[in-house]
Length: 377
Image (cartoon, rainbow, N blue to C red; front, side, top):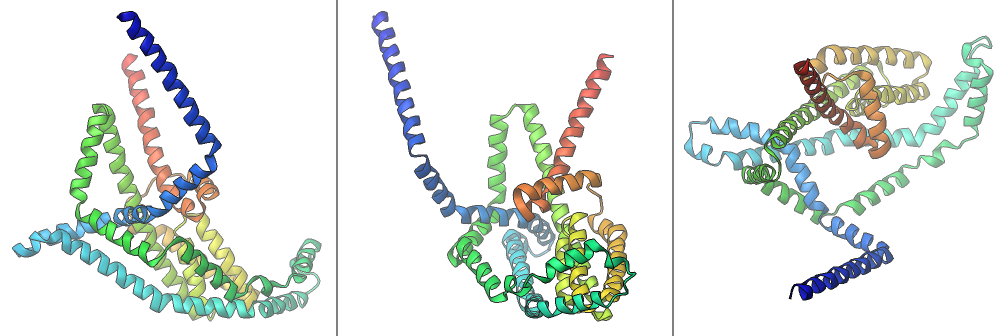
């Protein structure tokens, strides 16, 4: 009997091995179709991922507003505090979106259209001013003249046709999102925010059941640290970008710099990327000001913007953040470079809080090892 049973187990083993080999072979043989199917599946459920991301961004504001409603003496308001908090956050988000679309974007788009339509003439004026410089000027070197000579042969306007740019942008927007997907994402985010206590409790129980006690405590600790760092960074950088954009726009408008709203919006937006973002934005603003206003106006613009950025870096930004992320500038530049290389602009922005979390984990590990060494000694 035992011999029959062992024989049966042996045949089952070889049979299952053969089936596994066939499955792997077929999977590799139809790898393209499998990838296409998986890709289509993720494309279908992409609104759910977007909804989760929206809920994650709105989680902290919702929680704080809910606590404020729960302090009310009105029992009915306390009872529906969560629903009111979600409604309040979405109303604020919609109002901000309306302001962006009706107040800020039209001015910025108008500046972009004007710049693109006249950039060739601005460039020709800048070249003429360059030729009028004295021969002994430092800008009359052979290298500079060779570079300018090469640039003169380029028909800039043919690369900057606004209609084509808008067409590309609209095509991209239509390709990645539709009205239905946006609607689904919003609904998913609302349900997640409404049921966040149950969801977090379930995930917490799952982690506690799967992981060992020590591992669970560490995961819980670093998860809370990550959330705190991420929200603090995103909120502070966003608010700081708005303040810097407004200050720069006002300063440039007073100085009479052309396309002040566009340049202020650009500098504010890029200011969300620490260190490198400000440098890139100011360099772009300097080139545009040089083409439209000349060297003297560019120098004054650079002086004013650098002063404003120093005020922001030393006074405004620390006040908004409250407690710095305590990351070395060298580490920030490394994180932005790697994040940008792999994930583009979003990677440059999110690399800093990610590195801040990694830094905390590494420091805790090093401290733990040092404590163990000292205890042995």
